[in-house]
Length: 273
Length: 204
Image (cartoon, rainbow over all chains, first blue to last red; front, side, top):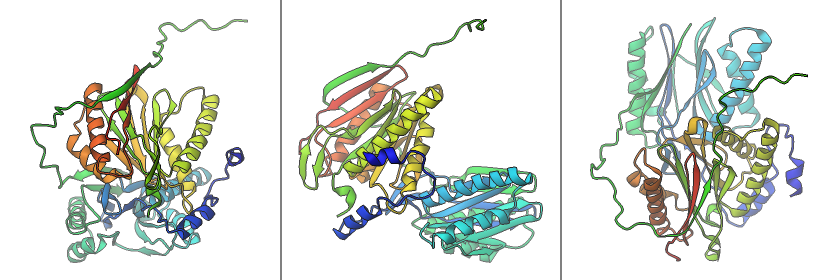
């Protein structure tokens, strides 16, 4: 109980106070539960007017599909988006944190964020945790210097590329890019190519599945096409739905009425001295 | 042996039409021995916000105490209840803080938000949120629960039908799991009332 009183204003960052207990449990043969991973196929490419990012939407927990329609394209700045693969909590936390840092930086400088700024924030954080924060990212955006596309690995190394893929489905998607990519693609061609690459990951990689999300970023505009393509609809819905002939037996029922919401019809007069 | 199989448990939350239901089993056990058959796994954070915690029972109780502490401070400062989305972000942040030495729990959060819109969400043990529009499951029986819910769920169910569906899904799934069961505990929440029901299940 004393611990509860002590943790009032936490300074932020990670807290390691349960590590000793968990290590003791591990020694007694207890396994850590599997974290939710985003098996994933994430891709990005540069086209003539900007950057297109694409991702599948399956989140796995071991061999089970935990979420059939999760969002893997995270917002960093109005002109910068980031796809994340790896441990889901890590990609979400790291992109949220860098998004806030970029916001503060924009207030400081009074200028639009640059993609290399986001890149530096991300690689600094990931390197300092030596790969234990398991986030593999495809970062893309358009700033005043032009369109940029980068990949960031969990240990903190980065690459700058015209087209990139990450995640368990990266080989399937890269096969499509390597054969069909060319410079100066139009918007439609770019979206078509990204969709094909993600579909290749969805159908050939077991860790990726469900739908295709696309994000198109250009100099003055961004378009987030959530569920742009849904190649895996549910095809086996029986028209005769479940009807339970044997009702559940209830032992006890307790009904608690909730307070009714009071509607203010006429505001009172202002108080006068 | 996984740490989640030390105490066992099953939790489901489902969305209906302007209402939601959250249900859990009632077993409290230590590995293969059952200690209690009336153990509460679903906690009421506020009138319209419920939190179910599956996994290691001691971490569930500790985490619940920390969350109530933060929620009560929030209520005092803001003079209102936390929205379910905000509460989910709070739980996620608290779990991610312990990223390298986590709490061994899987929370399920269910609440009525603005305009009485139902909100449900679950997380893994380090706070990766999964916001679903239909149902979320957690616990040792989760694989059976996923299957049962996928088959039995229909969108926009009325409270009575929702209760029947969630109960049948829960009871049929925990019957296939040794570490959960011994009855069920279901809360069906609509904008006007909360109906709490105890279900009769197999006691083995």
